[in-house]
Image (cartoon, rainbow, N blue to C red):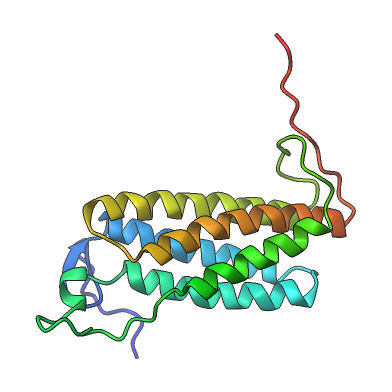
Length: 190
């Protein structure tokens, strides 16, 4: 398989199903941001963290490929006229979302109560989590904007929402595990 095809040289790219769109199309921005998020998760996974976190991040990365495939699919080409799926695109399940929620609940049990917002930072690994969280929120904003134009699988949108929450809790848990300083944001009084 060649990496370069030359078919995008004029500023368009093909979606799953063959439809060509401009490379700046919101659908491309959406799945491109999910791809960026996936790369940031790889950076977190490469840190010296608990293997259980690494294993879950690997699963999340797999699920993000699924979200990317969903976002990269032309909805008009995904379903045949008889209602059957034309393209074999995986799905995000409610169980995928439940896994993130269970993991957040378990991590939160070990953490002190959150009384203030926290400033990102304190340790390089924690900072990587906060960056990934921000990229995840951007992916979610783009995907919801796309959903206003063309309906997207609601589980894909929910997954991005829960994932950004998971990354926030993971950042807090890693701060705790690494004994990093978690700085509370206390607004200055004027």
